[in-house]
Amino acid sequence: MTQDTTQNAADTTETEPILGGRSAKYFTLGCKLNFAETAAMEQRLASAGVRRASNTEPADICVVNTCSVTEVADSKCRQAIHKLVRQNPGAVVVVTGCYAQLKPKEVAAIDGVSFLLGQNDKADIAKRIAIYINKVKESSEKNDSQESPTTSADSFVPSCARGERTRFFLKVQDGCNYFCTYCTIPFARGRSRNGSIESLVQQARDAAAQGGREIVLTGVNIGDFGRTTGESFLDLLKALDKVEGISRYRISSIEPNLLTDEVLQFCTSSRAFMPHFHIPLQAGSDEVLRLMHRRYDTAFFRDKINQVKSLLPDAFIGVDVIVGTRGETAELFSQSLAFVESLPVSQLHVFPYSERPGTAALRIAHSVSPQEKHRRCNLLIDISNSKLAAFYESFIGQERTVLVEHSSTNGVYHGFTDNYIRVELRSTRPDLDNQLQNCRLAGWNDSRNALIAEIK
Image (cartoon, rainbow, N blue to C red; front, side, top):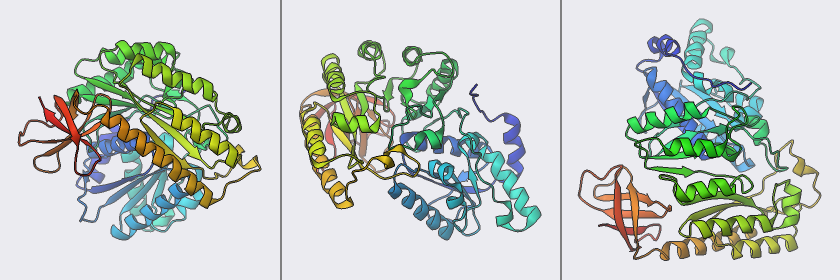
């Protein structure tokens, strides 16, 4: 039975004398779930007296939350670790996340890494650092105290954190049971598991009490919610929708076969769930989807997209596509390109396929050269740019509600509409941060990466 892992007050008290007054830096790669978990680890360290270091000062503690979805991700993780070690001499360097979980020996061998923190241990980061510091004091040799992460990833570690953003990220689920042929997530994060609806609703209430207005639901396969508690994703949405103080929810990513008719109907009539969906496609060819072991075909996917647009015509729909996977011949890619171009979606998130050790995809014979992957990526990125521009332009002149984000530049604010259009506002008002404003969308900003919003 999967357990919720929480840090109790005693753990925090024990670490305060050792960690109090220290500073930390954080570096995160990968998905929104990783960023949410990093923010939660920062909160746990802050409770133990650790402050965030400025960019210019050396930190006492460095936390690197890694991704391993591609070889490029692995390389970026190594570069980040080397840079932090170099810029923060003598720091306790803690590495966690998928790269550390999948390749612990490789990560532990990087000069300057103090210890690895397993997926199950993120809630105990303050305690683990305190234990490490004590061991170093006793041994006087840093490397003698190095530890590897636990090999299992079977606990659900809660996370609801804002970090540096306006919106909160609520982790509702972790792990995956799907075992798509190209993916290492089940090995890195374990099987699907989740917190209880009761505990997640309480975390949403806590976020509201801290001034949160918007929550993004995160996880690895969030539509699979309920496996460990006997509850359903639909029941979770209904319970969260009742939390007072939270004006907006967004579903970060959901498999097309798990975006059920009932879930869609609820989002259509709900108080707070926004017209915004991120739905992984991965390939627009039935043969490639079969090779990937995906649980739908292109006809099902098209019907799902059309259903979303029928129920919520203004909805923003983002779609993931992997390019150049094993078995994707030139003909199959042409099919995929034509299918994706025909879909009424708002944006594509395009990823070149990267071979991952231990995955079933390595048994598929046909491989695609790096140069061809690059060419195919660019074709899809061009389609994405055109779709995003067309989606934005279709709302120029309309009024939408915008959640204004904390401004880092005097007089210039940014935010997102309910249907995820990025906007730019110019105002001298000091009271706009984290406020919902009714705005008219007036046209592109100078950088053409947002629409100008005029407060009504």
